[in-house]
Image (cartoon, rainbow, N blue to C red; front, side, top):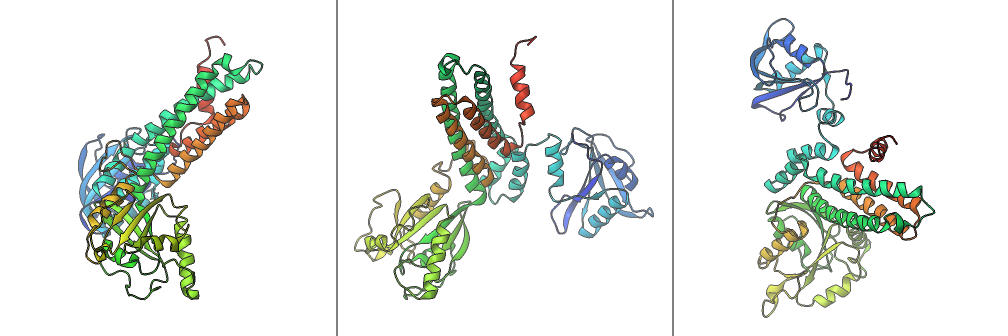
Length: 447
């Protein structure tokens, strides 16, 4: 446990008036402060009715108090929760009274920080608390709940355990540099590293889905002028968010709109039409459109269904670097016959009539879930930093695999160490001392 010398206090309920308001104290003097306020008896995990009083003995409020002695509390410290009426004025009076008795105002996130420092949560679980609070739909809430329950952390630790065993083996083999690696279990090491790389690949894909579920899918509407990008934005948003005219180059700047499709958040960015020429303002709009595509998850390429090939020529290679692409043939209602979707990445729609939008919604849901469809089994929330850490770990492990081919054991061991540290950044666990303990614990007694 961390040795936190001070006791912190904060209002734990949402801002504004409500039927019930809660104050939380954590630290060595939490129980003493609660008793000074007027809580006469404190039994662990029992509700006690009390009148909360100020320094002159006047009643501030009445309610119940709950005591969670260390280490069996959220933070791992002594915690007292005071529950009274949800008046912001009353709650602030109670905070001021606790501060006068020796507590201090908690920093944002400090209760969760102390829980992490005291080993009650790892970093991924602590972040999942914020994700659960901010969840915008049932699916996101369930994913955050799984991360808080440790589903994501256990997946990370399973892969980290594989890397630990590989590091132990490679570190031990360094002392026998004169021996060929194959005589020291080289085939086993290479096989284990290959399995670890595959496990990290699966973890990366699942974490990326969790990241999109938490952050939403960032998509850019791109295409030639007058293909109907702004009309499609309005149709998906359900309101007239973008100006629509028959004049080419009407959209000069980027326009952002956040929408929800069956619980999935989608940030749509309407951009200037791509073409050769245009005035200075239109060219700046096209430059911004290309810059937006450098950081997007999905390019929604909108083409005129009457001549899609001309649209493909107009945009050239602008979308080649975007990870995911969805081609929309808009104005399909103007064709002699509504065409069938010929390819999985092409959807025919009419932004003007709404035809084909259901199919577009289904494709966007599928892309946002990374191909997982509507299944939520095993789904967990994740953040961009988690995905980046896993990608870094995969890169280091891949280089370790290459070094093992040439039996450069020191270099392979270093790359495995870096891969292990990258994964450790997700949960905040496993230090160099931990590895040393694991290595020496595998030795024979007396060695």
